[in-house]
Structures are given as C-alpha cells and as structure tokens.
Length: 244
Length: 229
Image (tube, rainbow over all chains, first blue to last red; front, side, top):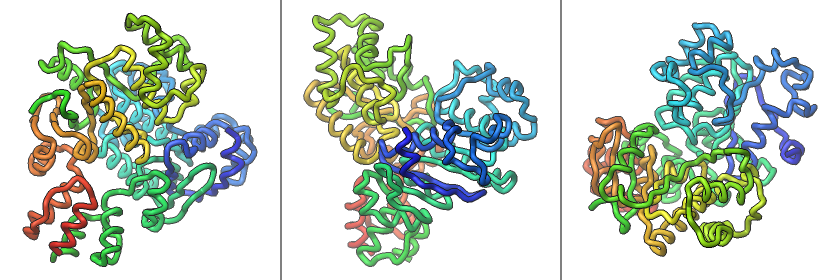
C-alpha cells in the first residue's frame, strides 16, 4: 500500500478537475484509498497543512471520496439519509435535480440497483460541500446519460462551491471532461497534460492496454492519412470537414 | 434467429434493472435450462473471503452435487485461466480482471447451459476485454454454452454480439444486432445508446449521401472514408 504514495508525487491545484487513468492494476483505487483514508500519512497535505492535523469535522468538509458500493447507510432511503445527516434542503434539491434522481430518492435501499447506490454516494459526498471530491471509477456503474448529468452538475457545482475534483477511470472518454490528465502505470506517472494532448499519443496508450475514445482514435488515424489536420470530437463537424 | 448456442446474444437496456433478468428467465429458449447469472460483485457472506472458501460456499449453497469438490474447483479455475492462483488467496487482493474470471469460474461449478453476463467487460481495460472475449468464445464452442450479454453499452454489443434484444421495461425489438443497431432513428426515438461508429456513418450518409458502409472495426471505416473522400 505504501509503495504507491512513495512513488507518486502528485500536486493538485484548487478548483481544478483532474482525471487519473490507467489499465487494470495500475494503482488507481489504491491511490484514491490513500487520499481518502490514510490520513496519518504526513506526506498528504491540503492547504499546506498535513491531513492528520485536521479534526474529523474539518475533514468532512475538506475531502470526501466515493468508492463505489463502499458505504454504510444510516437511513432507509436517500431522503432519510440526508435528513439524518442534517443536510439542508436547498443542497438536497439541487443535487437530486442535477442528477435527475428525485424519483428514486425515497426508494428503500433494498430496492436499489448498484447504479442507484453509486449516484446516492455521490449526492451524499457532495452534500457536505467538500473542497476536494475523489471519485473512483464511478463510470463503471453509471450509464452514459448519468455521466453527462454528473459532469454537467459538477461543472455548475464547481462554479458555486469551488471544488477540486480527482476522478479515476479506466475509460479514457471520461477524461475529456477534465482539465488535466495523468496516465499511471506500474507506480509511475506515464503521461500527463491536457487531456487532448495526452490522448493523441495513441501508440503509448494502446501499449498500456487502454482504448482511445472513438472520435480521438478516428481523428488520429485520419490525420495519419492526411485527411484531417486536428483532433475533432464532434461527429457532425468531422463529417463537414471531410465531405462539405 | 433467436437466442441459441450458435450465436452470442446481446440485450441492450437503457438503464440497469432486474426486470430484464425476469424477462430472460421466462424466455422459452432458455427457461428449461441450467442458467447462471454472472454479476460484477461478490457477496462476502459469512466472511468467506478466500477463493477456496467462496467456491466451496457456492457449491454448498446451491446444492451442487459433485464427486470431488476440490477437483471441480481446480478445473473451473483452470478453464478460465486462473489455475496459477493460490486457493487461500483473499478475493479482495485480486485484480478486477481476476475477479471477473473468478465470477465465471464460480458459475461454471454448476455446469450451466446458459451464461448471462451483466456488463461483461465493465471495469476491464482493452487488453483484458480482448482476453475475456477470446475465452468466452472458446468456452461457447468447446463446452456448448449459450452466452448472453446484458448491457447499456451499444458499442460493446455491436462489436461482440450477433443477435440482439432491445428491452426497456418491455421488449422493444429483437433481431440481428447489425440491423437493430444500425437503425439510428429507432434508437434515438427510444433514447437508447447508438454505437459511435454507426452514428458517425449515419451522419455521413444522411448529410452528404456518402456511399460508405456500416462497419464495426474502425480500420474498415478508415479505408471506406479514404475511398470516398
């Protein structure tokens, strides 16, 4: 466990969205666990202060993590849960509306799917208005529509509450929403930079066992054939460039 | 065409739901067969956390009658390529791809005729996705299994399945995967995910009447674009 923290040297700026991606076994979840739970490790600092110097109440509003399906619920439904946790109604409504899950917020936990539970975990984490939110491969449990809703909500949320978001994923398409991307493998930061700059390195990413998002893959290959100059993410625009 | 051993069947859903399992269990082609449902998660019941304990628990819990439990456990692990794992290994220490293969090995203990996977390649990187797909095709051929993938991911279903059921709280359509997933108008109308490669081709065809064909492999569409641009 400690090897990862000894090897990786991350520095995260405030109110920025970071993606960390890598193949299976590259250490993504371990990293999130360390950031979320290993508060005794002096090497993790937030606002130039060691994490273990904060008390638990302070920590709740500093850093919250979502590791899918790892949660102990206090209530019988999400609404009950939020009320037990004294979350004010305004933020409750804002989050439920943003993720479009109002209709399932009163359902009993026993009736929920894994997808519902992960969405609830995100609501609970955000309801504490943390400075840092850690998401561990949540897209593995959510649909494309859920992910679009989530990123839309997070963008809005960041503008309101100043949130630093650190999200791991093994799907490179998720990283397109972020400001900065790290590709990790075997205890090393393999690549880093703005997502589009990193994702252009198709040979390296394929060698690591990662598959490129379709439009990036298509753009890179068309560029190799001199049919395209730049990466194009929008299908309509790419069709226009090729055939207009 | 229908659900059978000769093809891999996909089920496209809009969002996860238990109703699709009930629907499949009532399907006349499989409802009288031994079925195993392979999910992502393990239930760590009674702290059965080692591979051996968990597999042994599965045998007892499902009343699977075997001549030699240990041999069957080892055989199942060998089929999925996990024979290198120590049976005393804690499941928590396995990688995602190993957990996925262990789920498959667990399901093989009862010698099912039908294997139903929920999001089969979820959590797997490209390399492990290819490995698992290769293994499943081999298992299907060698052991005569019917394989069904349930997923919200139309890209994956377009690439890996031959026959498709589209289900959203009720049956919407069934037929050849290629035909159904190339019906962009229908998919849009029902808010279902469209394979990206299909959507791109559809836009080119409908906007500029480009004579390119639908392909599931990106290298084929590149060749087609090169010819027609």
